[in-house]
Length: 444
Image (cartoon, rainbow, N blue to C red):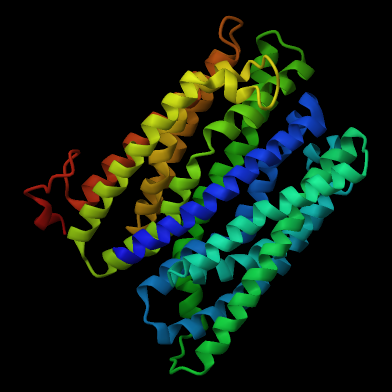
């Protein structure tokens, strides 16, 4: 448990610094790109998230789970096979990208070089995923913390230098913003690979056992495929969301340019502020996956019960005060981006969405560690379908517009949290109040 706490605290500190930098990054982008440019930038960002999910194949999760459950003497062989597997996936994904990217209409609104930036991103993400997965599973959280901080620091430095030295038209400015994402990922890859190579050299000097490549691929894919399916679904719906929101707002009477601006303020301002504290939840997720996997492989249910209780209490202790601050100081927070912005109202309405999001992330880590990725996927499908129907229906009404869209988003966050929590309690044999069920011994 001490290792869990130390790892979580280290990641939280690094993530807090990174989130502070990202907050500044979004302010820089808002001022350099303007309202319409920020809307276009945020509209393409879900596509980047989708590419990252595909390219990573969720190897950080599957490798970290494998490393946490297996003895160290198997790690070298597993990582060697994982690298070969990653190389084959990279070649395949790049070939597919060359065929598919020219057919995607979303790129028509951006600089022609944008699609090539995304192709470069594929191998960078795939290989960094292998190194990241090992360090997560081995609980070497200092490496992950440094990598996470580097990403934001390099991105901010790149943007500030380039925008200070040059003036760009809107399309080129958006290209520069996206280029910063690629540059920072390349720097992170360089750092992780250097640390990873050093670790592999250390393994060669220690006793080790071989694992058949087929067994390694099977073990990785058993986790990667369902988890990737879940992330693909999230990324695909996230990529669809800007277009659904814009379509709903246009049906409610807004012109297209105004709909883009409104979405830019929702995603670029309200989301930036609301998701700022989520670095704590994401830090917990990184540490929880190997910790829960290891405890569950040893059938240490008492530790799992106690850990779940502490994680939920801790999330409530920081979550409730933070959303109260969002609600009370929404005007002051949103004016950091734009003066007299309607994003202040969006931020206040989204308070339930952000609060339950803080709970969902560590619960998702629990589901992955307990081998319940399929359940997490089903929960996401159900809540997303209901949410999208509500968002489009209410958002299309002139009297609701963005307010109706936010109602649909709030509902999905609440429902997803309840479904995740009920499934975890059932698996662990505890009641909703986290007391041990009298029938739990039969379930195990």
